[in-house]
Image (cartoon, rainbow, N blue to C red):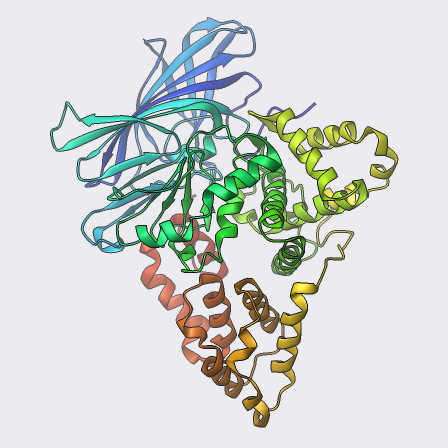
Length: 586
């Protein structure tokens, strides 16, 4: 039986579960706080139930009631990354099966880790402030007192009061707007999420993003007006991807699929909020070449949003299956060779993460122990690519992509609207392939799941698309300075954007190129002129050793100067990489 506790949460979901949230937010840009009230509908799972614990982080709690009656509450000691437990004592006893509405009145802190407040100067339009939230993995507790664990799935309703020149959007269906009856300078936006979803997907954005464009029958793109046309072009294949994903995984249950392009400080490529994917503006390359990021977020509508890892030890269930489905979408829209090519790149990303963490680091386990581990510190490509590698290995053993995709679709149907553990997934795998149990029993499950480092089996991927990248890389590495004239822009004519990215990645694995080679590469390929973030990232790394200003001291100086403009998650992770004080409260 799966454990009913989460090492990253103070709340125990063995005694009670949240079924619904009713939220009232008043967003205050002057003080950088949200003044709020949340009513949690809680179902009791045990007899003689008299108290419950919610997760909080830096919240100022002023009042708690239970079914309208005053309830005693205390805030426990503060943990370094888990925050503070909110202990609530009910004024009555409850029995198993009963429900109680617990209402908490509170205020967020200006430093809430889930929220980033931007000044007008930090936006594209330069006229209005901007707010967005990022709750994964354990940051929702700094925004809402809750059972902050992916095991909790519930519906919610929200009303959000904002300055009337701004627009609120959430990871939910829009349910109307009206002037704020308490303040004529403000407006209230209403949202409802009728599908049960984990609290980590509770997202809010307040911005001047009032220029949505239709990009499909169930999709709009939102952004500041300076980016909206670029975004509409970049994401124009969204409906095709949705239909392809539905053919593979089953019906899309969330109704609307909108995309919100956030400011550059958003710390991820994308975030799979139900109804509203958050995306970084670095995806706006102008050539649709980074659409695989949207394919990934669309895939999360099934593996992540619909079926969710129960705790963060089982994060690979979200990400490994999502990468698998993302690449199956690529297979349908492009080719099997394209899927194989992307899988090869993923294997290199996995190797880089293992090298960074160390091959014996337990955080490179597919199922790591998360006791006293901040999930943000454990974040890497391991759950994505080690998870995909396992699923691809099983695909080969079980009979190919069509056969194994049948299992993935059935797994999604079996566990839809719930949260699962690796043990539950494995048990269902053996049930689905009951006629191939003898093959599954030969898999070294301990090596795959609970052993650090690279997987025990290295897949043999089709190298057709990679061969051209490898050949060009070898030419640049072996060519002498006097022969650089043999390179020309024709080299790039037959390479796709994805292959160009791979070519640069391969060069980064070699010794640094001489200055003469880098200068010639810029002359013939004009890489400085490309807007694709994946290309620019690798190109800058390739030329970085040539520039003294890219020394560690300079990196630290630049980081400290611009740290305040970064998202808290980004700031803390970069600070650790540069060995600068993270600034985390303890």
